[in-house]
Amino acid sequence: MSIAQQIFDCPRVNLVRPGGLHHLWPYYEEWLERACDYSILEGETVDSLRADLISGDKLMAEIGNDDGAMAVAVLQIIATKEGKALHVVALAGESMHIWLDDFIAFLRTTAKGLGCSGVTLTGRKGWVKELQRYGFEYLYCNMRMKVWP
Image (tube, rainbow, N blue to C red; front, side, top):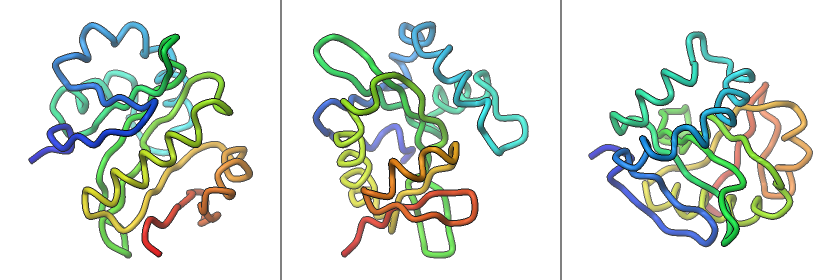
């Protein structure tokens, strides 16, 4: 079963099914293009993200409120030394102070529901300061948040 078939709910975070991606893509493309600028993976582009989202290999989460989307995230399950992890492949948007608490709660719930031992993400160094308050720790050039006690 692909990650796109395993849906978990959380306030302010909506998962975008692969079939709904076509209508929403123009809205998110610019945000994801910015996120790809910070990717450490060779060949990771907006087009490769879109192909992986359509195939169900990755999952898109829309983050917003009643006024509309404020951010978008691309997620994938990866294998780590500590077991499976829910990895935030790309995250971009606006008004982070409004949605970050809800997005972190969504990541914890989803990671646990998928049997993952943690959440990982790779991003700009500025994320370290913001995410440490949620339990992420600096680990090389990646950040990690454990979802177990």
